[in-house]
Length: 115
Image (cartoon, rainbow, N blue to C red; front, side, top):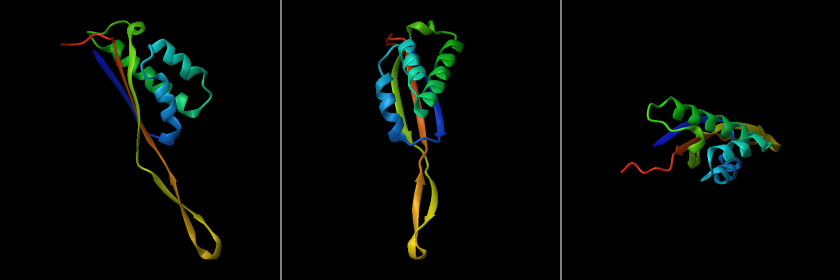
């Protein structure tokens, strides 16, 4: 059984969140929650919210197993649309600033293959 949760348009650069996504991938849910709770970064807060949403999705399914048996199968951080802003420069010129957003996808599995 696979359960997914997605957080879209998170105001965080994907580059800053991908290292945490790699750290929790393949871990049991309890260990992944400990990592996200003890890490003092904005990415950890957003990743923890998405992980808790995936756990809630798994508990609401009729054929679900207990939350302790779940494993983080995939944690993917993709790019969302960038907000384009401008910053004044010398001699009347302007520099573009890209405020990046990200889409966080977390897939949980119970480790059993469904045929």
